[in-house]
Image 1: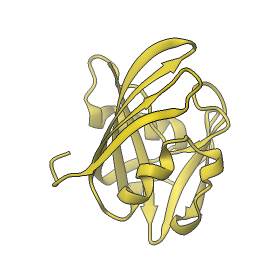
Image 2: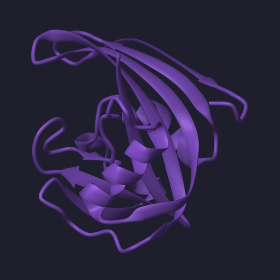
Image 3: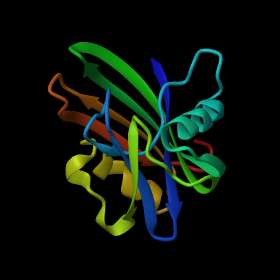
Image 4: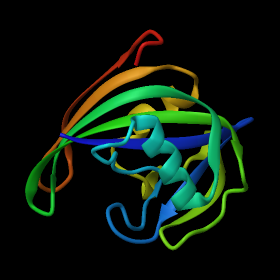
Length: 156
């Protein structure tokens, strides 16, 4: 199973999303993040990816979700575990890179039509302050065929 990170910056009633400019997820708004390297901690990957993708270093962040995806990537079955975090403090100013173009959005008007299909199911919950565990099963076309979401205590 591929271990990954996903980070959303939150300030007041706004959240920072980034438009993926190339590779996996190209053309979609998402948080920043990526694969955890074999010798890397989840938090280390979270910080590295944020620095590489939008030139910030999260300084106050909290894990808010564990999400498992059973899906297909380039026609091959893939399992992915996503460790989702929200940061409320960071150093640096979000800056566009070759990979990501960051933009602030009001939490009440997120661009779900250009985000991942699963985002409307769980992202509003974590932006409200809930912590969740979720799993999504998708067919070869990327359509959600089954999912579960449950609110959990602080131990995600």
